[in-house]
Amino acid sequence: MSYEQNRRIIYIALGSNATDSPIKSAQLLRSAVLQITLAIGNIYKSSNIFQTPCFPRGAGPDFANSVVAVETDLPVADVLERLHQIEAEFGRERLVRWGQRTLDLDLLADGDLVLPDRSTFLEWKDLPLSQQVSKAPDQLILPHPRIQDRAFVLVPWAEIEGGWLHPVLGKTVMEMCAALSDEDRAEVRPIPGEAAEK
Image (cartoon, rainbow, N blue to C red; front, side, top):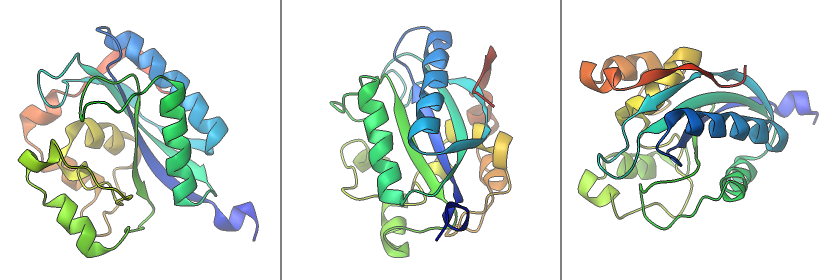
């Protein structure tokens, strides 16, 4: 089969709070977008870069966050492996869950693919916050089980593809974003003069 027949759109969230300067972290995200292009596929759309409070609060400096849509023909397992390789190249160390990080690349969704299955997705989606702090899946869960809760993902995602429909929840990115509190959405602020590569 040709590349054209296998090509599809995936969505990747980028985040960094490597420094106390969101502008410097934004510049790092722009470099990461280039690496994604080289390793995974063409950037179809990219959001502006936003400044968002660290999650959980107090765990480090504010983040720079964005979301990109990527055209690829790579199997999803290869995409994940290459994202981890890019993180490592940028000095990411997975020492503390939700700790300060040079680069965080999360595969949000691969079309309407649900992995490994609906029941496992729902188990992780409904995991209490107290357990999320210490428990991480040992396999890829798609769509990412926390997207519906995270303004720092949904606000930039809505900017580029608000109509993407969650294959389990049956809600679009715009609908999930609108369901967040006004306060949560307001905390996600564009960084003046900083945009991901278009």
